[in-house]
Length: 252
Image (cartoon, rainbow, N blue to C red):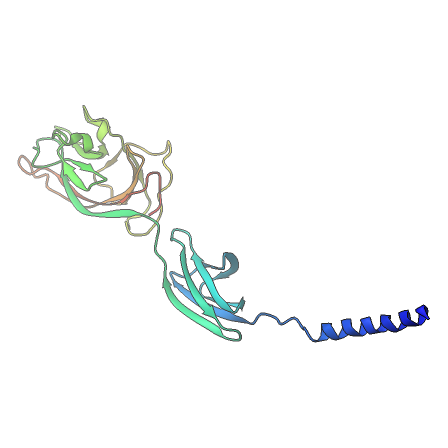
């Protein structure tokens, strides 16, 4: 009698288990897409902290429905993050996300400096690259001067050179002449090396990279020159430059 009861119970258990599985199917999470453009283009698209390996402008598909966190990453720009609601079966569109550069530079408009020979403090010869101020190399502010416009008494030598080449001044600046004349070409400075020098001719027409006493890079150009007509008419140059505010950062 016990054997008969056992045979009846086993099929019943199999039947119950089979019915339970069919009544509870796994429902997949609905997915949608997102189309993104950015200014500038070329930013990597990250969703919920994962790299999609898509680059703007592009559409990312199979994004889980719900509120998603999107981050755009591009070299020389700060990460830009925003949230967006994704609906299954639909493609959301986000266009013209403006990326903000993380390069911190100050552009100084042309500042005039005069040759050192035969000039006074009212005709300043030196520049403080960090502040954009012009000072005479014999003034109380001369300790701030990074570069100055050197000339000799004979009138044969005119140079833009490092302040430490002037007697009593200590601030050293190194120079590297580029092969381009467009100050606004966004080309980064090469890293300072032994190939750099401490002076350039005042006739240089290409822009010049600088590395100053405090470890800041600059990118400068002589944009105008004049004077030199004799006593009372000293030679002068107008200098425009970018100053990199972050120490040791050579990006422009």
